[in-house]
Image (cartoon, rainbow, N blue to C red; front, side):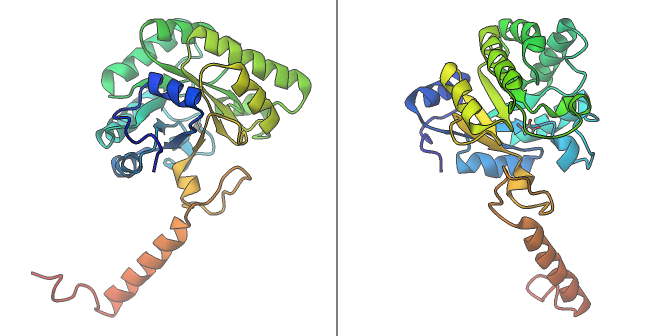
Length: 271
Ligand code: KIV
Protein backbone atom coordinates (compact mmCIF):
# COMPACT_ATOMS: atom_id res chain seq x y z
CA UNK A 1 0.00 0.00 0.00
CA UNK A 2 1.23 3.48 -0.80
CA UNK A 3 1.90 5.72 2.19
CA UNK A 4 0.18 8.51 0.28
CA UNK A 5 -3.04 6.70 -0.64
CA UNK A 6 -5.03 9.76 0.40
CA UNK A 7 -3.83 11.49 -2.80
CA UNK A 8 -6.84 11.13 -5.10
CA UNK A 9 -4.99 11.39 -8.38
CA UNK A 10 -1.24 11.45 -8.84
CA UNK A 11 -0.16 14.56 -10.71
CA UNK A 12 3.29 15.88 -11.61
CA UNK A 13 2.92 18.26 -8.67
CA UNK A 14 2.10 15.37 -6.32
CA UNK A 15 5.24 13.52 -7.46
CA UNK A 16 7.34 16.62 -6.77
CA UNK A 17 5.81 16.84 -3.30
CA UNK A 18 6.65 13.20 -2.60
CA UNK A 19 10.30 13.98 -3.40
CA UNK A 20 10.24 17.05 -1.14
CA UNK A 21 8.77 15.00 1.72
CA UNK A 22 11.27 12.17 1.16
CA UNK A 23 8.47 9.68 0.38
CA UNK A 24 9.66 7.16 -2.18
CA UNK A 25 7.70 6.90 -5.46
CA UNK A 26 6.56 3.47 -6.70
CA UNK A 27 6.22 2.77 -10.41
CA UNK A 28 5.56 -0.25 -12.62
CA UNK A 29 4.80 -0.90 -16.27
CA UNK A 30 1.47 -2.08 -17.71
CA UNK A 31 0.32 -2.95 -21.20
CA UNK A 32 -3.24 -4.23 -20.65
CA UNK A 33 -6.47 -3.29 -18.86
CA UNK A 34 -6.63 -5.91 -16.11
CA UNK A 35 -3.00 -5.56 -14.99
CA UNK A 36 -3.35 -1.78 -14.94
CA UNK A 37 -6.53 -2.08 -12.85
CA UNK A 38 -4.85 -4.35 -10.29
CA UNK A 39 -1.76 -2.11 -10.09
CA UNK A 40 -3.93 0.96 -9.60
CA UNK A 41 -5.92 -0.74 -6.82
CA UNK A 42 -2.66 -1.39 -4.92
CA UNK A 43 -1.91 2.33 -4.75
CA UNK A 44 1.05 2.37 -7.14
CA UNK A 45 2.00 5.98 -7.92
CA UNK A 46 2.95 5.77 -11.58
CA UNK A 47 2.15 3.34 -14.39
CA UNK A 48 4.35 3.43 -17.46
CA UNK A 49 3.13 2.05 -20.76
CA UNK A 50 6.73 1.24 -21.57
CA UNK A 51 8.10 0.42 -24.97
CA UNK A 52 9.34 -2.69 -23.12
CA UNK A 53 6.00 -3.99 -24.42
CA UNK A 54 8.02 -4.75 -27.56
CA UNK A 55 10.03 -7.31 -25.53
CA UNK A 56 7.64 -8.64 -22.93
CA UNK A 57 4.35 -8.46 -24.82
CA UNK A 58 5.34 -8.78 -28.47
CA UNK A 59 8.35 -11.07 -27.99
CA UNK A 60 10.86 -8.88 -29.87
CA UNK A 61 14.53 -8.80 -28.94
CA UNK A 62 14.70 -5.00 -28.66
CA UNK A 63 12.32 -2.09 -28.09
CA UNK A 64 12.86 -0.79 -31.63
CA UNK A 65 9.99 -2.44 -33.56
CA UNK A 66 7.04 -1.11 -31.50
CA UNK A 67 5.03 1.55 -33.35
CA UNK A 68 3.10 4.72 -32.44
CA UNK A 69 -0.20 2.97 -33.26
CA UNK A 70 0.67 0.06 -30.94
CA UNK A 71 1.73 2.35 -28.09
CA UNK A 72 -1.52 4.29 -28.47
CA UNK A 73 -3.62 1.10 -28.54
CA UNK A 74 -2.01 -0.26 -25.33
CA UNK A 75 -2.26 3.11 -23.59
CA UNK A 76 -5.98 3.31 -24.39
CA UNK A 77 -6.64 -0.05 -22.73
CA UNK A 78 -4.36 0.69 -19.75
CA UNK A 79 -5.96 4.03 -18.91
CA UNK A 80 -9.41 2.41 -18.81
CA UNK A 81 -8.26 0.50 -15.72
CA UNK A 82 -6.65 3.43 -13.88
CA UNK A 83 -8.25 5.99 -11.58
CA UNK A 84 -5.44 7.19 -9.37
CA UNK A 85 -1.98 6.45 -10.74
CA UNK A 86 -0.25 8.74 -13.21
CA UNK A 87 -0.09 7.04 -16.62
CA UNK A 88 2.94 7.91 -18.73
CA UNK A 89 3.60 6.61 -22.25
CA UNK A 90 6.93 5.83 -23.87
CA UNK A 91 7.43 7.57 -27.19
CA UNK A 92 8.57 4.72 -29.45
CA UNK A 93 11.82 4.62 -31.42
CA UNK A 94 11.81 7.06 -34.36
CA UNK A 95 8.73 8.95 -33.16
CA UNK A 96 10.90 11.86 -31.91
CA UNK A 97 14.43 11.30 -33.27
CA UNK A 98 13.73 12.72 -36.74
CA UNK A 99 13.14 16.33 -35.68
CA UNK A 100 11.81 18.48 -32.85
CA UNK A 101 8.59 19.07 -34.80
CA UNK A 102 8.07 15.36 -35.46
CA UNK A 103 8.51 14.62 -31.73
CA UNK A 104 6.16 17.46 -30.84
CA UNK A 105 3.50 16.23 -33.28
CA UNK A 106 3.73 12.65 -32.02
CA UNK A 107 3.57 13.69 -28.36
CA UNK A 108 0.45 15.69 -29.23
CA UNK A 109 -1.05 12.69 -31.01
CA UNK A 110 -0.51 10.48 -27.95
CA UNK A 111 -2.20 13.06 -25.73
CA UNK A 112 -5.11 13.53 -28.17
CA UNK A 113 -5.81 9.84 -28.67
CA UNK A 114 -5.23 8.44 -25.16
CA UNK A 115 -6.05 9.44 -21.60
CA UNK A 116 -2.38 9.43 -20.55
CA UNK A 117 -0.95 12.27 -18.49
CA UNK A 118 2.38 12.58 -20.26
CA UNK A 119 5.12 11.04 -22.36
CA UNK A 120 8.62 9.68 -21.76
CA UNK A 121 11.51 9.91 -24.15
CA UNK A 122 15.08 8.66 -24.04
CA UNK A 123 18.23 10.76 -24.25
CA UNK A 124 19.95 13.79 -22.75
CA UNK A 125 21.08 16.99 -24.39
CA UNK A 126 20.18 15.78 -27.90
CA UNK A 127 16.45 15.66 -27.01
CA UNK A 128 16.41 18.78 -24.80
CA UNK A 129 14.84 21.01 -27.46
CA UNK A 130 12.12 18.41 -28.09
CA UNK A 131 11.40 18.22 -24.35
CA UNK A 132 11.24 22.01 -24.19
CA UNK A 133 8.78 22.27 -27.07
CA UNK A 134 6.53 19.47 -25.76
CA UNK A 135 6.43 20.83 -22.19
CA UNK A 136 5.77 24.36 -23.44
CA UNK A 137 2.61 22.95 -25.04
CA UNK A 138 1.50 21.75 -21.59
CA UNK A 139 2.43 18.09 -22.01
CA UNK A 140 4.37 16.62 -19.06
CA UNK A 141 7.60 14.91 -20.13
CA UNK A 142 9.63 12.31 -18.30
CA UNK A 143 13.28 11.96 -19.29
CA UNK A 144 15.23 8.69 -19.44
CA UNK A 145 19.04 8.55 -19.25
CA UNK A 146 21.77 6.05 -18.40
CA UNK A 147 21.05 2.85 -20.29
CA UNK A 148 18.67 3.87 -23.08
CA UNK A 149 17.42 0.68 -24.79
CA UNK A 150 16.39 2.48 -27.99
CA UNK A 151 20.13 3.11 -28.62
CA UNK A 152 21.13 -0.53 -28.08
CA UNK A 153 22.76 -0.84 -31.50
CA UNK A 154 24.88 2.26 -30.86
CA UNK A 155 26.13 0.89 -27.51
CA UNK A 156 26.21 -2.76 -28.57
CA UNK A 157 25.19 -4.13 -25.16
CA UNK A 158 22.90 -3.65 -22.16
CA UNK A 159 25.90 -3.05 -19.87
CA UNK A 160 25.79 -0.61 -16.96
CA UNK A 161 26.37 3.05 -17.93
CA UNK A 162 28.26 5.82 -16.12
CA UNK A 163 31.04 3.66 -14.74
CA UNK A 164 33.84 5.65 -16.36
CA UNK A 165 34.19 9.29 -15.34
CA UNK A 166 33.48 10.88 -18.72
CA UNK A 167 30.23 8.88 -19.04
CA UNK A 168 29.24 9.69 -15.44
CA UNK A 169 29.89 13.42 -16.01
CA UNK A 170 27.78 13.31 -19.17
CA UNK A 171 24.88 11.63 -17.35
CA UNK A 172 24.95 14.28 -14.61
CA UNK A 173 25.10 17.06 -17.22
CA UNK A 174 22.26 15.49 -19.24
CA UNK A 175 20.08 15.22 -16.12
CA UNK A 176 20.49 18.94 -15.40
CA UNK A 177 19.81 19.88 -19.03
CA UNK A 178 16.63 17.77 -19.11
CA UNK A 179 15.40 19.31 -15.87
CA UNK A 180 16.09 22.78 -17.24
CA UNK A 181 14.24 21.88 -20.47
CA UNK A 182 11.08 21.25 -18.40
CA UNK A 183 10.94 17.51 -17.62
CA UNK A 184 8.91 16.69 -14.49
CA UNK A 185 10.92 13.54 -13.67
CA UNK A 186 13.77 11.41 -14.99
CA UNK A 187 14.25 7.65 -15.23
CA UNK A 188 17.81 6.60 -14.38
CA UNK A 189 18.51 3.17 -15.84
CA UNK A 190 21.39 0.87 -14.89
CA UNK A 191 23.90 3.36 -13.49
CA UNK A 192 26.01 3.07 -10.31
CA UNK A 193 24.09 3.84 -7.09
CA UNK A 194 26.65 6.53 -6.17
CA UNK A 195 26.10 8.37 -9.45
CA UNK A 196 22.29 8.06 -9.12
CA UNK A 197 22.61 9.61 -5.63
CA UNK A 198 24.61 12.53 -7.02
CA UNK A 199 22.07 13.07 -9.84
CA UNK A 200 19.12 12.78 -7.43
CA UNK A 201 20.63 15.31 -5.01
CA UNK A 202 21.43 17.79 -7.75
CA UNK A 203 17.87 17.89 -9.15
CA UNK A 204 14.62 19.31 -7.80
CA UNK A 205 12.55 16.90 -9.93
CA UNK A 206 12.19 13.25 -8.85
CA UNK A 207 14.44 10.52 -10.22
CA UNK A 208 12.97 7.06 -10.79
CA UNK A 209 15.56 4.31 -10.82
CA UNK A 210 15.76 0.94 -12.50
CA UNK A 211 19.02 -0.74 -11.64
CA UNK A 212 20.21 2.57 -10.19
CA UNK A 213 20.30 1.81 -6.46
CA UNK A 214 18.45 2.92 -3.37
CA UNK A 215 19.07 6.68 -3.48
CA UNK A 216 16.67 7.51 -6.33
CA UNK A 217 13.40 9.23 -5.39
CA UNK A 218 11.48 6.22 -6.67
CA UNK A 219 11.83 2.83 -8.33
CA UNK A 220 10.35 1.25 -11.44
CA UNK A 221 10.42 -2.33 -12.69
CA UNK A 222 8.92 -4.04 -15.72
CA UNK A 223 5.86 -5.78 -14.25
CA UNK A 224 6.16 -9.18 -15.99
CA UNK A 225 9.80 -9.29 -14.80
CA UNK A 226 9.04 -8.59 -11.12
CA UNK A 227 6.07 -10.97 -11.15
CA UNK A 228 8.33 -13.75 -12.43
CA UNK A 229 6.52 -14.40 -15.70
CA UNK A 230 9.85 -15.04 -17.42
CA UNK A 231 12.07 -16.62 -14.78
CA UNK A 232 14.96 -17.03 -17.22
CA UNK A 233 15.29 -13.24 -17.41
CA UNK A 234 16.90 -12.35 -14.10
CA UNK A 235 19.37 -9.46 -14.23
CA UNK A 236 20.73 -8.27 -10.87
CA UNK A 237 18.31 -5.32 -10.59
CA UNK A 238 15.14 -7.44 -10.95
CA UNK A 239 13.65 -8.83 -7.75
CA UNK A 240 11.08 -11.59 -8.31
CA UNK A 241 8.18 -10.67 -6.02
CA UNK A 242 6.30 -13.68 -7.36
CA UNK A 243 6.96 -16.71 -9.57
CA UNK A 244 3.83 -16.43 -11.72
CA UNK A 245 5.30 -18.55 -14.53
CA UNK A 246 5.37 -21.52 -12.14
CA UNK A 247 1.85 -20.78 -10.84
CA UNK A 248 0.51 -20.62 -14.42
CA UNK A 249 2.24 -23.89 -15.34
CA UNK A 250 0.73 -25.60 -12.28
CA UNK A 251 -2.75 -24.20 -12.90
CA UNK A 252 -2.81 -25.13 -16.59
CA UNK A 253 -1.36 -28.63 -15.92
CA UNK A 254 -4.15 -29.21 -13.40
CA UNK A 255 -6.76 -27.91 -15.85
CA UNK A 256 -5.54 -30.30 -18.58
CA UNK A 257 -5.55 -33.23 -16.15
CA UNK A 258 -9.06 -32.35 -14.91
CA UNK A 259 -10.38 -32.27 -18.49
CA UNK A 260 -8.76 -35.62 -19.31
CA UNK A 261 -10.08 -37.23 -16.13
CA UNK A 262 -13.51 -35.64 -16.70
CA UNK A 263 -13.18 -33.78 -13.37
CA UNK A 264 -14.07 -30.51 -15.08
CA UNK A 265 -16.73 -29.21 -15.35
CA UNK A 266 -18.57 -30.53 -12.30
CA UNK A 267 -22.36 -30.57 -11.95
CA UNK A 268 -22.21 -27.23 -10.07
CA UNK A 269 -20.25 -25.74 -12.92
CA UNK A 270 -22.85 -26.93 -15.47
CA UNK A 271 -26.30 -25.61 -16.46
O1 KIV B 1 10.03 0.59 -21.43
C1 KIV B 1 10.11 0.50 -20.21
O2 KIV B 1 9.52 -0.36 -19.56
C2 KIV B 1 10.98 1.46 -19.52
C3 KIV B 1 11.30 1.20 -18.09
C4 KIV B 1 12.27 0.10 -18.00
C5 KIV B 1 11.76 2.40 -17.38
O3 KIV B 1 11.44 2.39 -20.10
